[in-house]
Length: 147
Image 1 (cartoon, helix red, strand yellow):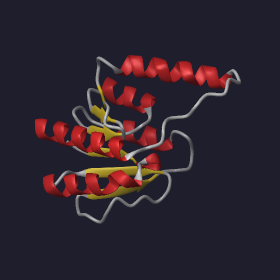
Image 2 (cartoon, one colour):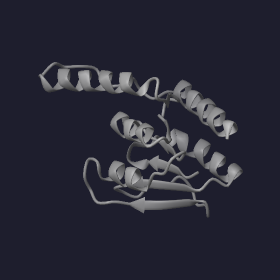
Image 3 (cartoon, one colour):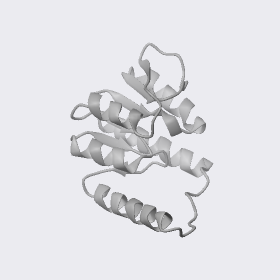
Image 4 (cartoon, one colour):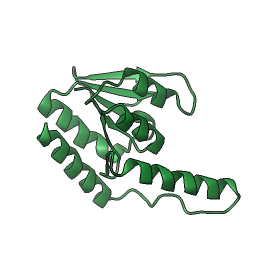
């Protein structure tokens, strides 16, 4: 299993948690982004910088992804592609995307995008909190223990 991290929007608060898990489990990890991201220096982590562009990192992850790999991303369309490839996805707030919930998450995301595109002002996501960090850590550990 390879862990792929969609690095462009990866919260700084999660980096030490993820780094400890990578080191503890000797987990092969590829951080994909369109700018330099540093989670930590490790022989288990490869940093891959792609061209600038909205979906370049997502496209590279999908290209490299194999069945049963693991992706950390807050991008719901990317998570949908991950699930379609029979891999696993976890968001920054600890939600594990599955066959059972990905279509609903995608539908809600698309609805909100349509509302914003129509000119309606909407709130963005809530601020990232310490509670989100804890939920991510718990979900990450639970997933990795299942392996």
